[in-house]
Amino acid sequence: MSSVKQGHHSAHSWLVDAEVIQDLTPQHFDIGYWQSAGLVTGHSSGRGTTYFVRLNSTPLVLRHYRRGGLIGRLLSDQYLYTGLDNCRSFQEFRLLSWMHKRGLPVPRPIAAHVYRSGLIYRADLLLQQIENARDLHQILCTSGLAESLWQEVGRTIAKMHLAQIYHHDLNIHNLMLDAQGKVWLIDFDRCEKRNGTAWQANNLARLKRSLEKETARTQQYHYQPDNFSHLLHGYHLQHNEDKHDAATD
Image (cartoon, rainbow, N blue to C red):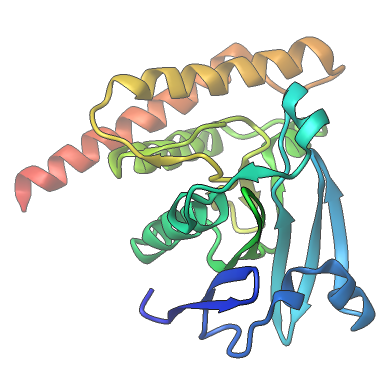
């Protein structure tokens, strides 16, 4: 994105898409700022609370980085600072920018924030919200997906793999379907461009495990083993089409 600008103020550093926010300040990463302006439209809870806010006519998502697992109980939202380029928010912003520019179905990154305090930092990310979308887990709790949509999920994952994008946490909570039937992939923390193809099968296996895990613990979960076969069919169709297009260029 040519419109991306970098800024600093005191202990704060940020990247911002200036086409969306021309006068960004550290307060844009403080939920209190949005609440006082009456611009919070909702929230969701997971590892932490993600807030939905609105800037003019643009719906945004504000996410604060938090650790998971046992270390998260001790350090919560603190990370070791080894330079801005190594900060999680900056890395995710730049990867999303690269993917968004190439037309991949990911949220548009709006701003990334780092607040440094000595050897540690805290981080935030602002994204454009995918409107009228639900994650795959929410959908499967109430209804099944058509075979064609399972294939579209597979095609979407294949597009990521063909672009050499490794998703660190490929699960049903990070796949979304909007009202037009378009599949999106979200949450690219700790993700990266990765060479080779050996890792791709493991990526798919992780997704399959997440589906099976929910089936085992959630009553009336609308997933059947042959659904994943349809997903794989779409995945391989996309690979074959890409090979055909490459051969005819």
